[in-house]
Image 1 (cartoon, rainbow, N blue to C red):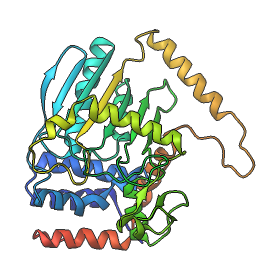
Image 2 (image 1 turned 90 degrees about the vertical axis):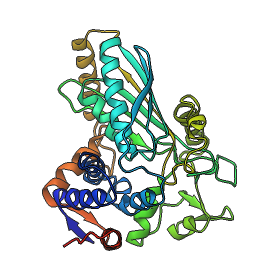
Image 3 (image 1 turned 90 degrees about the horizontal axis):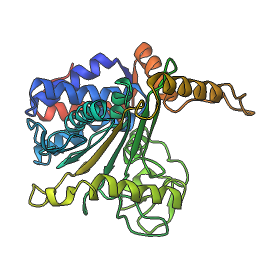
Amino acid sequence: MIVKSADRLREVSQQIFEAVGCPEDIALRVSTALVDANLVGHDSHGVIRIPQYVNAVREGHVVADARPILIRETAVTGLVDGRWAFGQLSAYYATEVAIAKAKASGISMVGIVRCNHIGRLGEYATMASDAGVAAIVTTGGFGGRGVSAAPFGGAKPVLGTNPIAVGLPAGVEPDVLVDFATTAVAAGKIEVARAKKIPLPPGSIVDREGRPTTDPEDYYKGGMLLPFGGHKGYSLSVVVEFLGRILTGADAFAEGNRGGPVYGHSGALVIAMDPGVFVNPEQYAAAADETLRRLKSVPPAPGSPGVMIPGEPESRSRSERIANGIPLAEDTWAAIINTARQIGVTIE
């Protein structure tokens, strides 16, 4: 295991993405998103993705200098064409649009089509809560690409990890953040386990024959992800598929493209809500804070460190990693260095 500072990882990442054709601001946006994922402890969506993203650019699935545009809108809705740009750029832009519309009209819904992998969904939910707006963010899979999860009771992958994130502003208490895949483990976390050479938790995946396994290599040999919580996670995954892909019409927009995103999704949805739409903002903030304080006041169960608010683990990780650096598996760092070398970038 090696340790790098957030600033150093952003610098390295930006060098690499500029070398494959990203303008400076786009390279910075993507690099900031990746390193932020590492800071909050979601290493599966951090700099480990650099080699994949570079390959996606070189293979034509990500357009390095593309920028998303708003192609359809009403007072409360918007449709963003990601134009196969980096998903982190498209999702950031769509979230900005959703926040502005929610503040103006009380609620908004902004879809994204032709959208590559947007990274950690919690980033956009947090963007909204930081702006005083509640938000739900989802992404749906795309056709036959990127599917890795078997439906409950099935033995063939037809779904993606289909994540969902929710950001809820509080008053003086920290905001609430919920962010997880609807599979028992995100695909990126399998990559992290593989790089660290550690087993997966039981119940995360099955091998190509449908047999339970904890070996990350079995996933890359045709294995499948399992939904978390059995039928409950599977049902939520179907909801996310409808919201992120079917509702946005992502499939129709994806037809005739370069082959679709290899490392991500083609549809995403941001639903934003002004928390003062039913009660005045002061009432909302007071009720939110009282609820969070009541949760934190519950005594810890035996063997537990105590109750945490959703989003608290990410906040603790950020503080610890800003102070002490971001740990990376040696294989992860070696893969980044090798990717840089392939495109003519020397990393000291």
